[in-house]
Image 1 (cartoon, rainbow, N blue to C red):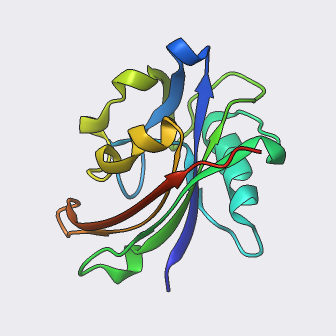
Image 2 (spheres, one colour):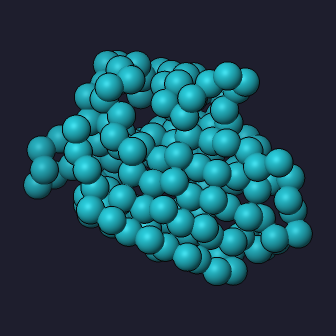
Length: 163
């Protein structure tokens, strides 16, 4: 069984000086890594509903469902650890209410879009995150090794359709 997760990259500021809200993961899988707010789907939730709930729980920011733009759907087989395998639905959001605050799971901070802390993120982020934040959509399968590195990546980028 593959876990369904949602992650949101909240973007603020003018196009020439955009900042992205990321946070240091304080618990669970990926502890110590820099990630976008998000988490596991609960029963009967859609990917959007999961994204809204997780952002509120992790950083205290309220998002409207219509403000989320899909960026990526990525399947992550975890080699040798099938219980961790997941399908991630990534969104970008540029309209929000509230100021980010720490939770038990995440310590948020704003990062310049052009200077993301890719070396502190999951190894696959450098393969796709800058491109989707710049306006592309991604469908991918990225295999993760037991050492949490990328074993293989099948990436399919498309032009992002904005509503």
